[in-house]
Length: 167
Image (cartoon, rainbow, N blue to C red; front, side, top):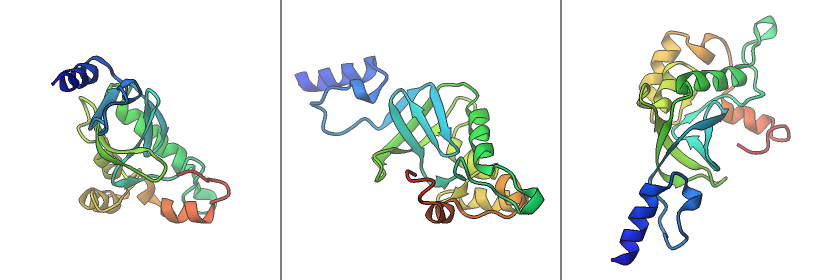
């Protein structure tokens, strides 16, 4: 009983996962705070790196389009995520981590309930199954990366593995 009280008191009185005592074997299922946008599908709250689950955005140094129509779609995706978040506090709900130990989460703000879905809906990320409807709509309306040709981020990472080691 004492441990439960200690755990609840600790979770509700602190804002970062790093501060939760090591006696907890199961990590909390949500994290909230101000964010640093890393790229179009990754953010950081305090010292915790979070990957937006179910989506894949172009890499920061990835370009889309062809010839004279090329543009920095990876940089644009990051900027669009920053605009969606709009300096608001973000709440992320999660249940697992990826192979790089990043939390895989669905995140939102007071204004944008599901940032993951919004990135796909606005055409700045592709769906990993979860947001197929949003992806089809973005594709149909030629939003974001769908306005021109592009290489899927996963394929781009494989062909640029020496340039972009961690993703």
